[in-house]
Length: 173
Image (cartoon, rainbow, N blue to C red; front, side):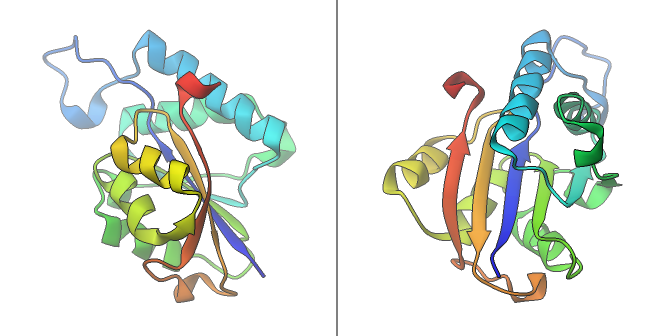
């Protein structure tokens, strides 16, 4: 059985609100549009997750809500919002993946860089070279990576144990 992880970085956030703490920054207009585009992409490719774990940061929550608004209602599981994904390290992201139950076949993680890009690079032991190079070069806001793990249980996920199947940036669609 193949498990999949969708890794979505939050969309472009606002920087023009000097009194707002980082955790509470909202999306910029460009970020709103990018989040919607990524949601449509997930719908068009039928990449609906069984489980969603999202950072509690306002920009990550808004990215997820805008993306999910593009999906049919049946395709949107109730997300888990956790502060553990706020600025999470690659190791914390791996632990979040390993904590998933057996019934979950496709997991979506929504969070922040630099952790997200590093997580994808460390997890992907294989995949098309051009995709891997694109991730290594930059994991921009609202980018989405899709990885396959050849394991039966999430607890068995290991560094280098995934194949990078797709990497889509908002500018690509």
